Image (cartoon, rainbow, N blue to C red; front, side, top):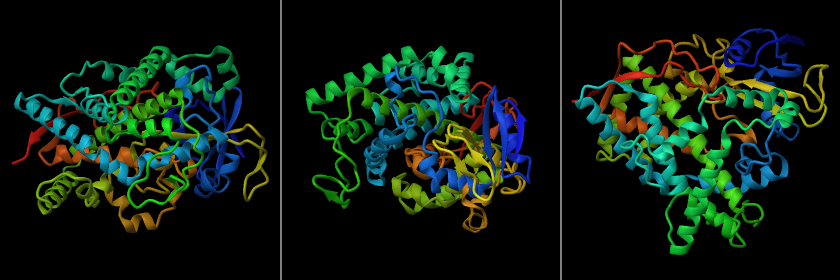
Length: 468
């Protein structure tokens, strides 16, 4: 096994993911802590799926004094499994269809706002524009709050959203230390500026729940679903779903969520839901502006599908847009929102087909960014090519070299929600506008070095033009 000393940065992980073609795995150091980077797709399958019981923990330091940390992303072991089972029914296709009108209303509002910008001849920094759209979506479906950040960009919900992923030195150091030196992190207990954010969201959830229960108010959104988990311990099934003893089949125990549990789940849905989708949508628009042939083909598909369905943007019409799906998939390949996946082995583990034994407690890193840019798996990886996700191309490729949402039991639970709002946003925009580069557009985007997700350091500046 090769051991190198290297900084744990996106650029480093990209280089390591692309290089050392003959190595299935590479050892490196985060400060003084040894870590293992896995490159072999079949070994990745073992870590994420086949031997999940050995690698179910992320290996991050979790500040147990912070109530909002009790969410699905951070939890491990039995607590994680029970909560995962309970929350899975909140993201079924039936539940998403119930939320669709809210998402589409926000998409229509975004298209109207863009129209006003076009009339004024303004170019747009699209990441902020899209972030206001996704903030409106998530604040509505997760908290029942009608914020209209698209008309009021300084609404407090948008301000708090910015604070969650603000790439400060403090938050960056806290995230890195939580992975490469949990012992030091526990000693320092770096808060990363989260205390005020935590107080705000806990109070928001408490006030929303109190209002709904006092006024017997219901709404087809995520908040209603976790209120069911608070009061009954399970979510009412969709029509046609199997029910056993009054609850969904496989829904786990009937243990009820506490208010702190509710706030934590609502918080992570808000934080992960608005930022990752806005990033994916923004990067997609960037690539469409630079690849007019791809944009033209997508325009044709959107026009054809909407014409067949009376111009209605619905859950079903979105599902019929196959080229849209390949475009979004290629964007997530080139710009994965989470550039790295991390796990920790909870017992000594012999790496298959080798003599190497990982000691208990060894962190394991999967460079999603590196895999997605490895020419072994994706020829000419810097080229934006949606045909990489045709059925024929996917059939020729190992399934574990494309991991924008992770894989296995810990795959992103909100994956379908994230894809849906990304596609709704794109369809509302592209059904009415073309997108073009401006003099401010940076062709080869650089990434913010202190961000825990993939963000463009220079912003994404584009011009929208009305279609006739």
